[in-house]
Image (tube, rainbow, N blue to C red; front, side, top):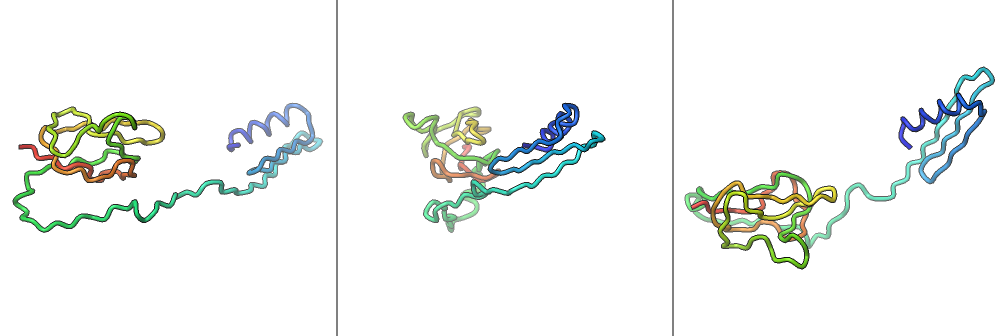
Length: 157
């Protein structure tokens, strides 16, 4: 129950003429008593129950180690990095039985769908803002991604 529901219950008990109501669930105990004068007295005893961890642990082998490459900076100055616009889970294909949206070496156009990022059970298609050729795919399929995390490297030439 949220605070508004509790307040509505207190008002209902006061208007109905009932002198006492007790509600118990696995995560909340609530007792509402009305005095003879009609004044409402409430007492809540919240019980905190943690049914799911706030942060799910990810096995160490799923972490991506950052790639360290030594190369001329001038070689990669013209490359464009496409980043995730949202937090979620990265998918390279629209469904498990379909082929990947793109592969390394594929040519893309502005508006081409590159991947899908699932956020809160919504699958968001990520479209390219650039035309060019896919040089690198920086994230593994079904991996969690953060806002502004690099996903693809594109050669616009």
